[in-house]
Length: 264
Image 1 (spheres, rainbow, N blue to C red):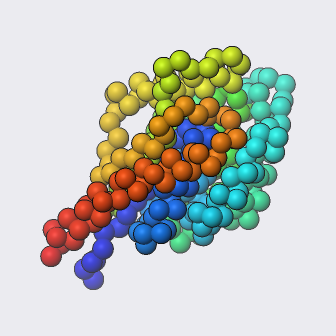
Image 2: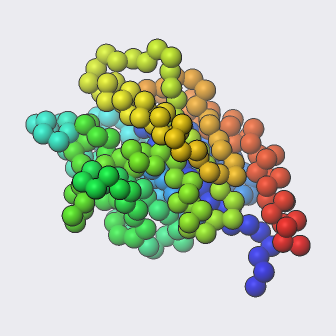
Image 3: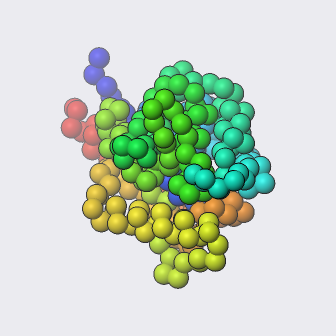
């Protein structure tokens, strides 16, 4: 059967708390009736994308954003491989995903992680959502890496900050990538968390120079400095995502119509 609509894939990038901007993007997609057929995400992008695929509306996600206050998921451990064990975080994800498996989602989702041992990208398309998300969001040095079989896994953003090519490989006709990175001119480096995050940001910036994000639409919603590990300004971040999605909406519609034109 010939398709009359392109399949649309979302690539949701890493960026800690700035990932809440993804909620604003999803809100606009909901309002405009733009279907999402495939999702790939790194770190917070994986969290938001998976919850969306589970059927959570943008309004639901706004409410859930409050659960990411540090007091709810920080469980300090004796520093060996990380400052935070990640057990409470995995428990939070288990609760939010109701213990579901990735392969049971109606909208296919790929969760991107990085293997510290091999330096390779490890993609999750099945298995426990909670375990995959816990691995993908594990910022090196802050969270203890997640062990999965022979793999020692950390934040997907280390190797693939905005996994647009993953969405293409999943079969999307049109790829919308959302990059929530931000590079302040005068970053704050007053704590060990700031030092680790700023190191990650520098690495991400260099990755951008070396590897262009291949997408039909690239959204860059973050227009003001937001600390990646401070979860206190969710409303502003969601609004920034919403405004960028509205700004890009004509281009998205244009790409959809152009795809239809090629098929007719």
